Image (tube, rainbow, N blue to C red; front, side, top):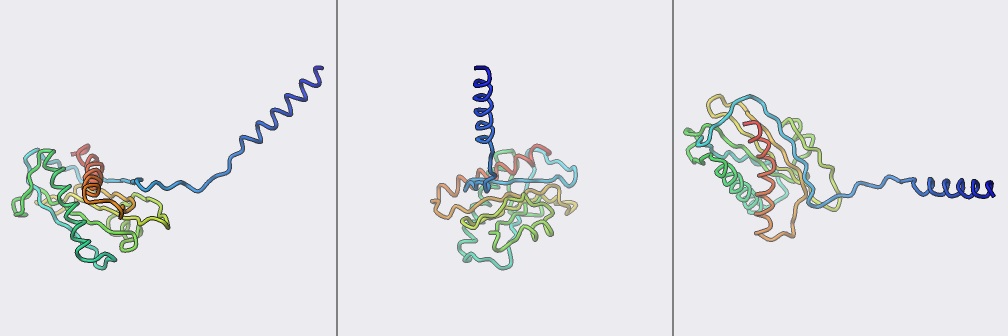
Length: 188
């Protein structure tokens, strides 16, 4: 009887162990997935009320039409201004009165590779690509107006939501800007 129980237990244990074997699957890609990284270059801080100006940077050659590029840049410019304003900074068109400049750029991976971002910008979040989705990058930096040196750099990578309506795009853009700028405010 004891032998039967031991044999049954051994058989059950071996079945249980073999059932626990896992096979690694390809990582699941979430369309809403974001990868964010940032770096503080120099320890300059700006107080509330400091003025800033925008300095958009464009990729030389893009797969988007000019009006599409302008629409995307306007979404990001509006989100950056709203975000910085909500944290007490003031936007100015006159860059000579700025305490800092906010440079930014937006590009699809087909127009700006991770390697180029890393070589020219110095940081890459490293979101893996997906053949079914268009990966894009949002790069932003704070440059001190007095010294001309970069104070902080941030980079976000995600997947384009081509089927989103205007309200959804505006909301997503604001969320992306907010998430990366949180890292700036944490060190300002």
